[in-house]
Amino acid sequence: MCLIWMVRPTRLNPKMAAPTWHLAPWRPYSLAPAVARHTTLFLILKRGRHPVTGCSVKLTSERAETDPKVFTKIHMHFTITGNVPASAAERAIAMSHEKYCSASIMLGKTAEMTTSFEILP
Image (cartoon, rainbow, N blue to C red; front, side, top):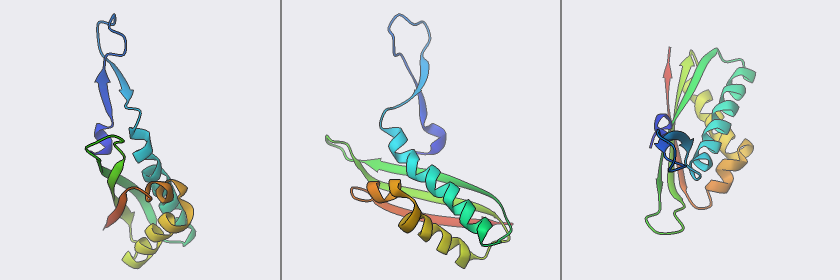
């Protein structure tokens, strides 16, 4: 699943003529570490005086087939824009996971969390 597909149409009230858009109740749990790590990554690179001009994250995840349907895998792919050294990006991603993101640490108890990144000029 990708961040772009996080919202889906559903009829919350059968009397409504058209479906309404909502976020499925379990989806914010996968969004929390992506948002936190994205923000932290950007700030770490800025504080390191690296010329980062943009950052985005694409999230994919898998859930268990049976109840409780916990997350079993979460992958975040970061796209960093700017003339940032790969070693600095790698270090910032690791720091955001190991030190600053409590959501990643909590979800990491049940899910295998992986990351990848690319740097664009």
